Length: 382
Image 1 (tube, rainbow, N blue to C red):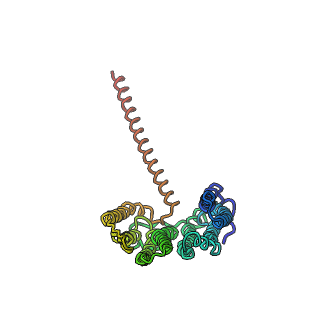
Image 2 (cartoon, rainbow, N blue to C red):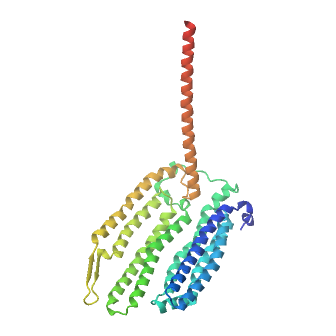
Image 3 (cartoon, rainbow, N blue to C red):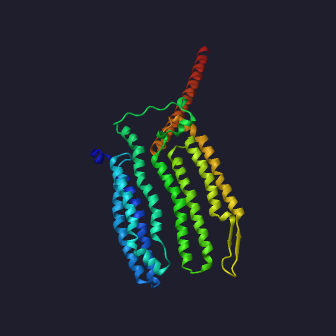
């Protein structure tokens, strides 16, 4: 680790302040306000004292961890991507977030109060589900550091820039080379896919099962069994989708290495929708004197057709972005470099436009000069 990368010449107060504000809102202000609103509602309805005491303890946890995470966010944002200084503060903040969420359980007291006042809810199972995407969030600073380390060193003049790869030497199967990929983008998309297709549905199912269990009605056992089956499908389909999402995010737009997992993801998503939508037919006849049949297969098929259109999008993405990716020398899909390329293209376009206007103006001036010379020659002749 280079201590010089903690030097103040790499420090940006503006960027650090922006990241600190984002961390303060996410980890301090919003949770604290929500708990404060909960206390106000509880006081207005004369709720149980144990719930008020629990919310008070949760507010204390939010204050302690929220302030620390805000400070870490400031230093993380103040240093540039690819530096050891940003990596250190980023990895520390990511690990501390997991400790923060675990502390909200209050050694089981949170679950105990919810069980007494509402229904038996397994918060430990929910935390386990949260832990896996949180672990990916811990790996994301590693990915950011790996992606931006060389570009930052090149910018600092400590490494020579790599030569641009010639398009003539590149074949479509070369798109799968690891050097074209962004580890941070892959982890980010894989994490969001895992949350959306596995974690959130499973948490909803855990809450539904807890609610049904509190009814103490034997006739809902079949519905509980259906929820267990759906949970198994969510895991079996969601985990492969998260793995495919990693490669989709890892490789840049315009590459076959991104296009292929993206198309497979759409196909799996169609089946995921079909399973989660109960094949378009909801039947509830477990309780005597109550029978409910709801057929929404046409609506479900319409949703699936709309989802299938993403295949068309990815085909167009491949066709439109591939020439640009080739022209740039097959770089990684890094936001800063992408912005720099767009800025360079904009400036080049403006220069071409200015050159065209200058040529037009010179042509007009030359034409006017020629007309004046002809007119002067004519007058001299007369």
